[in-house]
Amino acid sequence: MTTDQIVYAVFGCVIAFALILDLGFMSKKNSIISISQALKQTFLWVLLALAFFVFLWFEEGQKIGLEYLSGYLMEWSLSIDNIFVFILIFDAFKVKEKNYPRVLLIGILAAIVFRVIFITLGVALVAKFAWVLYVFGVFLVYTGYKMFVANEEDSFDPHESGVYKFLKKILPIGNTDGDGKFVIRDHNNKPVYTSLFVVVVLLAAIDLVFALDSIPAVMGISRNSLVIYTSNIFAVLGLRSLFFLLRGAVNEFEHLQQGIAIVLVFIGAKMLGEHYINMWMDKNAQVILSLLVILFCITGSILYSIFINKQKMLKANKE
Image 1 (cartoon, helix red, strand yellow):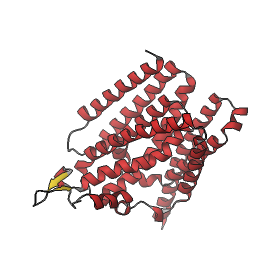
Image 2 (tube, helix red, strand yellow):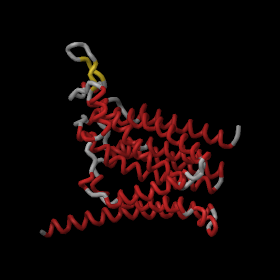
Image 3 (cartoon, rainbow, N blue to C red):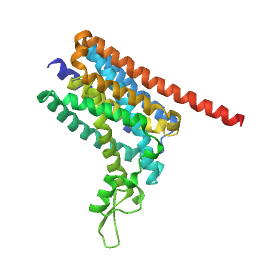
Image 4 (cartoon, rainbow, N blue to C red):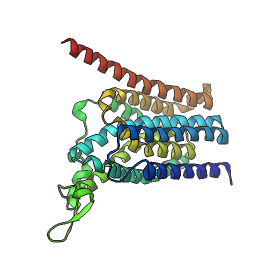
């Protein structure tokens, strides 16, 4: 077996072990996941992702290891942005809390399948047409700018989304959750798709929209398909536990979006200026720089959000 084949085999075993542990032992069907459970599950996924980073460093070398860590942190921070939208979807369709785990799991697993397809197509495109990277670079700079200047009026409305309107056109959609079912039968014994089915489709579709940002972003950090696949899948699989951990605190991170936007602009600009950057900075230094920028922007935006919220609370208490 080649080194890459060994790494993929280890990655597959780690993912299988984590899913069995997470779903088989740490979660119960139709149960409400507590903050304590979510913390344990989030810790499990982060610990495994970091352990895989150490393994990758020893197997593939420092450069690949740091590229993976940078990609994982990039995808993880974008995953937090996903959670903001996930919460809007659950609230809009009044999903019962006991159905959260199963709906999230199915939506996320579907998103992973689509992401693998997207990554495969993206890697193939870049391998055949190098100029596609410049298209990705322009797209990331534009997306980062739009994200930075976005305001509350631009917030996502699930009932106004194109996916929901399309589903209503082609399928009989009911206003019930079917007591946890995705499809029920009406009085004429015809199938009716429940709100839970709609939510699963929306979760997968929204993650695909985020993938349009995240996959080019990680390709701006590394062209290695091993790094791109593993960093994406680790980050997305940790989404479910992260949702339960952060759903009550998302408003505390109101400036995180700006931090992510700066990172997207930085990576997009780096892709556009790659030819000139390579002339005065080697690849290892570029990877380290990307890692530091990601850490600084994400950590800084979270800390700044917490500071601003505390200032608002102090001001409100004084008044």
